[in-house]
Length: 412
Image 1 (cartoon, rainbow, N blue to C red):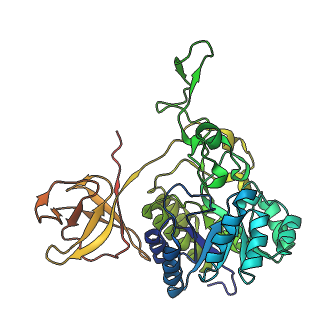
Image 2: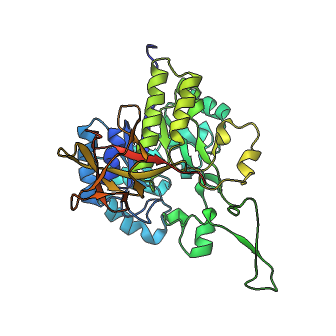
């Protein structure tokens, strides 16, 4: 084990209290969450204030920090409502608030002077002067622009005492630092207010001006075209360089994602950081962990702006639809001692005879061929399990209450 090696904080997203518990269980050092107002993921989910209090209690009991996002753009007319909202946060023991608007920073420092402030990537910080400037009114951490190079990151680290955080995994936006107007233009829902409809992920056709309703495909492959799509960021293979650069926090994107995504990405990056800590982060380990990441639905991976020498990869949108090699089939509900197997809440259809891949905290994934399925509702044997069913996987034995169940997709 290498002495005095600084391992960055692993910062993980959670869209609700249930997913927060998965993040904690799978090894997050900190979890970032949003409320019902003023954050950039406001379409669904998020925490009520009582749920936030419960989340704080749960994370702190497990030695994990919790950060709260107030990172949307705030208009003048919204300031009174924001002020009322921030006042409600004063008695909740969150560890930091993430902001992008300087006015929000000033308001929080006025109302909760002791609160730590983290600057969102939406603020588009690209140099050490900007980092240090933000430290003067009270920012303790800055998440740099995703477009920054590794060379510039290292120089910034040398010239500031403020904590530096970077994204290492998740969706990238086609717009600089996520400042996109496409959703608002097309649907009236503003991305900078947390209402993004992800218009960049839609399928598009070409229409000639004089021939309304005659649509021509803009073809790239048999699935169509995704001209605005971006690849997904994955800096797993470069993780040791980031650790050696002494970055303070590594952030995973995905506050709209499921238990499957949060659990798997947290497990992979926790494992990778542990390998680095113990000087075991070999090419074989990287290959193994990348293979595990492949079990979650994703777009083609990219090393993004930070490590790519040829940025044309980021402009090449060919074949950037979703890749699904495994189906997320369910989560643990309870244990049935009579049939010696877990009861699972089914997310996607599967059947007896298939091989289930089981992810559990602090363990390597295990495989189990399903012999018999029993309905938890009426104790009858079933051949198929369908979404929203509860079934018992007989003979599997005891597994973690935070187990994630996947099955390899059939290639057609």
